[in-house]
Structure formats: C-alpha cells, structure tokens
Length: 277
Image (cartoon, rainbow, N blue to C red; front, side, top):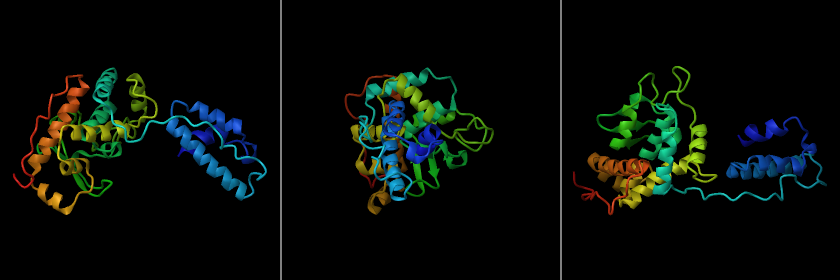
C-alpha cells in the first residue's frame, strides 16, 4: 500500500539499481507531515532493496539506499485524546460544511468506540434505533452488538436514509469509503499533533473515557467488542440496561467534551451488581 501510494508514483520509472540514498531521503522528507507512514516506507524499502540484492537486481557492493536515514519521532500508538483535545476536535469539526456525512461518521466513531471501518460498512438494516442497538454481523472478533448511547443515536437520527448505508458516499447507492481526508484536515486544524491516528482519537479515546468514568472493566470490554470470559458474557447478555446506561454515560460525556463543557467532579453512574436486572 505504501509503495503504491508513495514510492511508485515518485520512483516507479527508475530501475532498482538507479535509486539512490538521496532519492529515498527526498521522498522521506516529503512525507514529514506523516511521520509514521514515512518511517514505515523506509522500513519496507530497506527490505525490498535487500531482496533485490539477493535476487541480483541491485549490486551487493552498493549500500542499501533505504538505510541510515534519520527517522521522524512518532506519537505512541494507542494514545487517546484528552478532554481539551476532544474540545478542539469538536471546534474543528464545527468548521466543516454543515451536513457533511463524513463529519457525522467521525462523530459516531468517537461516541461508540467502534472501528472506523465498521462504521463505514454499517447498514441501516442492522440498526435498531428504538432499542439503541447496532448488530455487526462480521466484526473483527465475530458478530457482536454495539450499544448506542443517546448522543450516538442523535447523530444517526440526523442522517437521511437515502440508501442501505448509514454513511452514504458521493456515488448513489455506495457507502462512504474513507475518513482520511477529513481526519487529516481537522487534526491539523485542532493541532492534535502529527502521526495521531483516527483509530486512536476515536476508539482509544472512548475506552479511556469509560475507564475514567469507572465503568467496570468487563462492561467496557463488551462495549468495545473485546473478547470477554464466558462468565462475563453470560452475566450481561440479558442485562442490556446496564450496557445502555454505560453507553449513555460515555457517549454523553464525550459529547459534552466536544462542546467544551466542564468535566464532572466524580463519576455519575453507579452500576448494580452484574447479575441484577
């Protein structure tokens, strides 16, 4: 993917043996605003030129042109946004064109903790707004249910049902295919720092907020679609009220953070014993 996006357009017309250290250094510098991708590109190129030397496509007497470059600092993966950053993100999204489907999709990802790819593949037929449940037939860990906080339901209620997909693309009948352009635009506007992934800003932020609000660990795991013990699954499989209250709490607090409202002094929801209904 990185070769197709960056290396081939820049150097695809050159023979392998003609590519120099300076060529790859220039490409690496061109991607300075995407430090993770820039560094991964060098790693892939280093492996590719090592293989080329083994196969006789590149002289073994020449140094690997992808080695000995200064790598860019990267933000740790899995880093969640803090409350101030969520507020800046909310302000940046407010500057986008009103009614933009991709804005709604990004908000929905944050307010549910779902994976961006799951949101873009979601269909109306799998969502029960009245019950506030979204069934994912083919999630990463298998079929699962996403319990929707009221703030997430409000996002969906504002969408036009003009096709099978929750988030329709520009082509009639097709789903929105990517949030990358929007994310890069608003992340820069909100000054969130280079290299921060949409996945981290949505999914990890939801998980972190749930932990800060003292949502029990097994409830957090079920909200996020993580694997849980059979015992934990059995305790909550019928206790949807517990999961909906947790989803309400987390999504509601993130929605307040979006609007730059003050954080609560203490967690505002107490969970009953897991076996109670």
